[in-house]
Image (cartoon, rainbow, N blue to C red; front, side, top):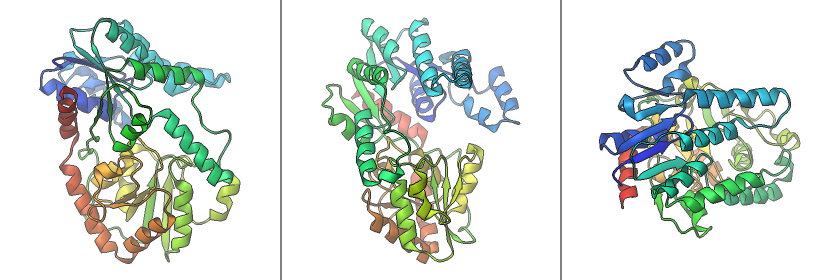
Amino acid sequence: MSSVIVSHPHLAAFSSGLATSLARQHRLAAYFTGVAAAEGTAAAAALAAIARVAPVARNRIVEDLPAPLLRSLPAVELGARLVAELCGRVGLPVSGYNAIFSAHDRVVASLPWPTADAVYAYEDAALLTFRRARRRGLRAIWDLPLPHYRTIEELFRTEAARWPRALTGALPTEPPWKRARKDEELALATTVAVASAFTRHSLEREEIGAPIVTVPYGFPVDAFEVRAHRPAGPFTVLSVGTHDLRKGTPYLLEAWTRAAIPDAELHLVGPLRLGASFLEPYRGTFRHWPHVPKSQLMRRYQAADLLAFPTLGDGFGLVIQEAMCCGTPVVTTACGGGPECITDGVDGWLVPPRDIDALVDVMRAAAADRERAFEMGRRARARAERWTWRDAGDALVRGLEA
């Protein structure tokens, strides 16, 4: 693998990490993405100016990447977002995610490509790109950020049977056209890249023929600062992300109730997608923020004694790494990136999925010895510093060459 085209619809840490690692080794042919600018360019200066009023714009500046290798497609990303929003206003069910990923794939597949021997693209944005790559005899490397869709759908069915009042609406399933798209992307792939053993296992159940490369995501140590002191005030458990059946939120709420830690607080940040009748017995036991800007998340992590992420099926779980970078210890399961990030009892806790008693034990132990939990968080930060995006990108390049 001497030269690779990387394609992702919007600037994401995992695609940028791979692109910059390839560029350092002079193996990046081009990096096609959405709104983005290489550091030191006029476009980057414009994004930095915008960031004064919209801090999220700074996330679209790419460091350590030669400007000629960055093929930014802002009109595609912004246009797709606008179309999806306008369709929503007139009642047409067009997903912003689907619009952006499909449009990016179509445009990248039609643009001129530099000389390359491999194309690296992401689930839901690879179909037309891979068709073109295979016609040209190029390797087609498919990145799967979540477990296989059939694993996720099975998980929702299982949990809905266990917590029938928690389900809101119909069971989440992919529409037929999207299933067909995913299936063909996977069939066209010559290699599949994943970030966790859990996602790899979901593919192995499908008995796919392509080899699977597993490399954990890098810790965002530059974006999240470690806290200097133990949190003051009430003992606080934080949970960040979408709160639904797949994320294991019913188990967390039940464990929190049973733990009955005096003068403690449970904070949920992110959409709460659980039935009202299910939530009723837990009202008043937690505080909820439907949305917190990314720029304010670091402060939330730093103020918490513990991050709880009892997921039942994740591709990785970036919040695990964000909290650890802040020096906040994490309790999670093996159903995501937990085993790749945490050594149980050393720099965090790994509990069996659906094990309410194990969650209770960890939360009570952390509350009983907050200083020990703080020291565990310091070890979590130390671990983060040993596996940055540069390390992950280099490891992925080596894995793809094997």
